[in-house]
Image 1 (tube, rainbow, N blue to C red):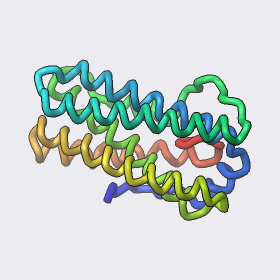
Image 2 (spheres, rainbow, N blue to C red; image 1 turned 90 degrees about the vertical axis):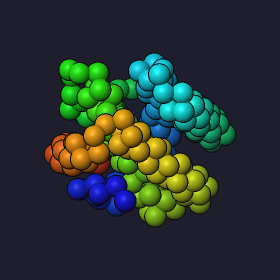
Image 3 (cartoon, rainbow, N blue to C red; image 1 turned 135 degrees about the vertical axis):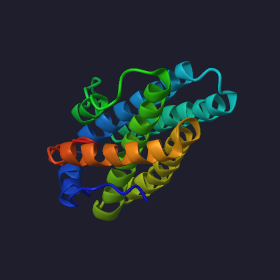
Image 4 (cartoon, helix red, strand yellow; image 1 turned 120 degrees about the horizontal axis):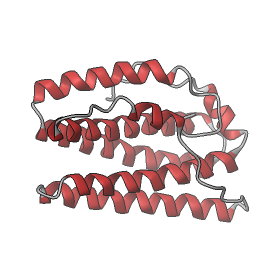
Length: 192
């Protein structure tokens, strides 16, 4: 579905499962940042009421995911750690084109789609490889949600930009993401 060029090594799930408290804290902060990203897209697209309505729903859903992960952290007696930077997302952000507003909007939507695609793929790896049954079910549910967000963001990019150019740019995003994801997959973080 996503055409990611480099799949996550399933052994990453073992790293994640080795420190569930850390992966949950990192995940919670990823959801908070996804909420913020949806809100920032709303700020960029006020002239598109239907898109704004969808982005509000995504922001609310991401905030709900943040709350759900936070509740799991509390229930399991883990300490909810401080926000941390996401090196993967920061590297992706460097690929966003600057310049014309229309190009920036499309690229910001593709940037969001890429993060959702990789997050969905990571949740799938967790669902298929961890032993914790509660978290398996939780990540399966979130995997479906992230796939829907990916579809929404890439759909908006295709709606607002020239379809052929957007599809070509998505291929460039896939290539770029493959070049940076090689450095990740060895830490107890969703993208790490």
